[in-house]
Length: 71
Image (cartoon, rainbow, N blue to C red; front, side, top):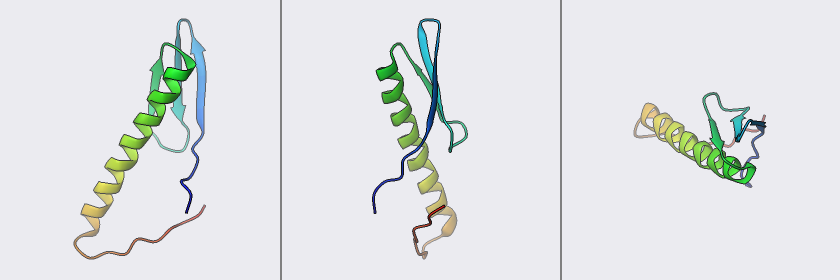
């Protein structure tokens, strides 16, 4: 199954670019260039997803089933 795409709301604010991942609260970043911002957002998103995945697996316990869910 292909990785889902996420939507970034981005804007330039003075000398900086700032952005937020719309689907995941708290995932935001900044960069000196648009390209740097997008790379930083990608990194922040990966970290958040990895953390959430590990937290969910820990909460589920030793025996669990993973299933794909589509919106």
